Length: 257
Image 1: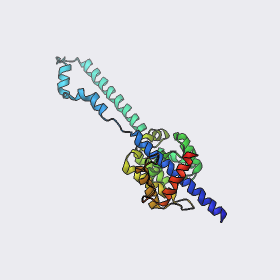
Image 2: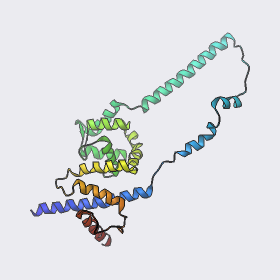
Image 3: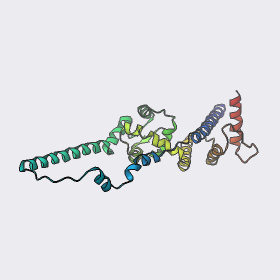
């Protein structure tokens, strides 16, 4: 009995620490207010849009008289144009093959971490995180798990990997690295943030000791949205669950110590 009680207390303290981190993350995201400036390209290309392509061409290029080519010149010109078009097509084709998503390449990439299994486990996940340059506890890994619709924390099945990476159009480590900022951007959207937050609850439910229910989990989100980071506007007589009253008391004691 004593060991079970200690385990429950440990789990509760772990969840309280998580609540504190979620509270800080949410307010930090609001302070950062990351938005993309989409007006710059329009500003830069505005002068190009001020005239039609035919008008601009006529102003820049004066008319010139046609020259009747000699038979040798005509054959040479046709060959030159043909070679030029071929080189352009060949270059585009190679570039497209390299950039296009490949299911085969994605599958090979999966087995770099899964080995002979059809699932990436803890060891493979550790190497995967190292390769993409993020810590396993980084919030972007939660977003990635959400995009892959992973059902178990710390595991990616073959089906989850192929479906999720296809939707992200990632089949290499480099492509996923370049997608990390895109994944983080989901946290800046209130609707997606709520979906990711609720998804995280299913991960939390995998704990042996259930110390928080879904209603309490949703109350934590509302708490982090409405209560100041210093907890100055928290009303202890409000309709908050006991769990959050205990969290506020624990957090204030921790700040004072």
